[in-house]
Every structure is written in C-alpha cells, then in structure tokens.
Amino acid sequence: MPVVKQKEKQLRAEIIDGRALAKTLRESIARHVAVLIEDHKILPGLAVVLIGDDPGSVIYVNNKKKAAVEVGIRSFVHHLPKNTSQDELLKLVQALNGEKKVHGILVQLPLPKQIDANTVLKTIDPAKDVDGLHIENIGRLMTGMPGLVPCTPLGCLALIKKVEKNLTGLHAVVIGRSNLVGKPVAQLLLRENCTVTVCHSRTPQLSHITRQADILVVAAGKAGLVKADWIKPGAIVIDIGINRTKAGGISGDVDFDDVSKVAGYITPVPGGVGPMTIACLLGNTVAAACRQNELTAPHIG
Ligand code: NAP
Image (cartoon, rainbow, N blue to C red; front, side, top):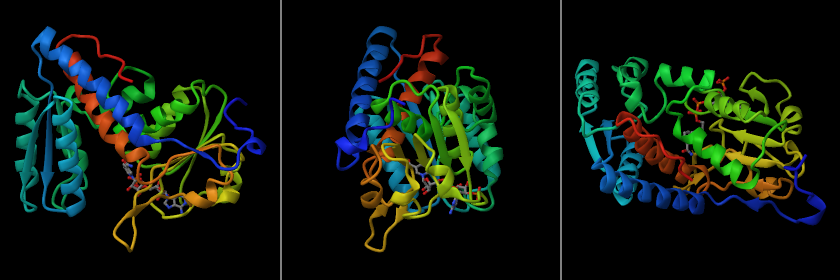
C-alpha cells in the first residue's frame, strides 16, 4: 500500500498542518470571490443564525464571520435570544431562503431545547444549506450526486488527500457515526474507493479494528481515546475530536504524543481539522453562490 509510510525510515509521524492548508484554501476562495464580483457582479453572502449565548457557539460564529469577511464574502449574523420559539426561527430561515443577497445559511448547533434541530434543518433551502445537513444534501452525498457536503468531513478528506492522492483500496476506519461528522466522513471515503469500517460506542474490540486501518478518522468526543497500540504503523490519523482541557485549552480524541511514535501522518488539535472546517464553509458558500447563478462551482483547493 502506498499510503503506509515505512516506519523504519522515520522516527515520528509527519504532522498534517491544517492551519497551513486552510490558509491556502482561503486564498484560493478569495480569488474566486474576486472573480465573481468582478466578472459576474455577484457578492457571495453567508447568513449565520445563533440562538442564545453559549460561549463556545459565540466564538465559533465570530470566527466564521471574521473568516467570511477576510475572503470577501458578505456576512449576516442573526443573534437571537435563547428563549426564541421554533416558529420565530423558522420564519427567519424562510425569510433568508428568499433573500437574494444570502447564498448560504448556517444555523449554529446545538439549539435550545424548545427547538427541534431536524425541523429547522429541513426548512433551509437545500441550495443554501452550506452545512450540508439537509436531508436532500445527505441523499445527494449518499447517491453520488453533486450537492453541498458537511464542512468538517470535507476538511478531513482534504487533509487526507494532502498526503495521499489515491485512496483506492485503502482500509479507512471511522470512529463515530453522527450525522454531522462520522457518517458523512464514511460516505466521502467510500466515494474515494476506500473500504470503510464505521465504529461506535457499541463496537467490540475497537483497537483490533483500528489496527487494520490505513486511514483512521476519530470523531468520538473522548479525550485521548486512541493510543499508539491502536495504530497500524505508518497509518494516516485524522483527529476530529474537540475536548476542553482543565487548563482552558482543547485536546483531541487521539493521544498525540503516543500515536505520533507509530503513525505515518497525524493531525494536531488544535491546528488540524478545526481550521479546515471554516475554510470549507467558505468554499461551500462560494459553490452555492455559483450554482444559484447557474455558474459552474469552482474546484477550490
Ligand atoms: P457525537 O454526536 O457525540 O458522536 C460521537 C460518536 O462517537 C457517536 O457515534 C458515539 O457512538 C461515538 N463514540 C463515543 N464514545 C465512543 C467510544 N468510547 N468508542 C467508540 N465510539 C465512541 O459527536 P460529533 O458531533 O460527531 O463530534 C465528535 C467530536 O468531533 C466532538 O469532540 C466534537 O466536538 C468534534 N467536532 C469537531 C469539529 C471540528 O471542526 N474540528 C466539528 C464537529 C465536531 P454512539 O453512536 O454509539 O453513541
């Protein structure tokens, strides 16, 4: 297998730098935005809806707004109080669906208890669903049709392809089966002709399965779950997990120092998948703006 690095030739895994790749992606997106404005008089617009004041969500929304503005995308932030009713939110989403200046709509999750996330997600116009969570876009991903793909899984695939272009025939193991991350990552890897195994909290002998992985993607939300003896020597390890540390920072689901002694490539936390998620959101917004104006969505990268 080409992907598995010859461990005897290296001492530690090569770090896949998500910050650097995201910067390259954002620069490419900024060039596409400039062309859309100059040649087609289209200014891509992204609406982000935030309900309540969860500190993590406030930071994410501010980061998304800042990143959008930096590449030339117009950003509309709708910050509503935490007691907003489902009807009020649905009315806002419907208004954004009809707003010509808005090409992408993102409703920041999680939502307060009184609001059903599935009802909100299926109200978003699929053509503006830049988070790729509408059932139509999930169906498109499942059936191989073009559509909007969830941002974190897209970012993961870009990180993997940064170090290995041809994934055909490789065994990819995904830990986690959420609609947001695990399932769409598995679909993308299947589309790349990987043999995919999806694991979850009820999977017995998890480490036995992960040791067979040429590519291991971890999205469990369990700090330090994956250790060195779970890894096939030379494998690509992508850590999606974000866990708050006691010191106020974040850590991943992979024991980075330990696993680096065995893996061929590894993403750090922070600085791996996180920056790619936001860059892919911007890419999806540009793709949505193009398709809504009957232009071919550019390949951004
Ligand atoms: P989630 O909805 O809680 O799903 C977690 C998945 O992991 C579930 O399928 C669960 O299995 C599985 N799991 C939990 N503990 C496990 C264990 N000990 N062994 C095996 N499987 C286990 O979380 P999510 O939304 O997918 O997010 C996962 C992680 O990624 C979180 O840390 C989240 O913060 C992070 N994340 C990061 C980004 C980013 O941009 N970097 C974006 C999104 C999410 P069951 O289905 O059986 O319960």
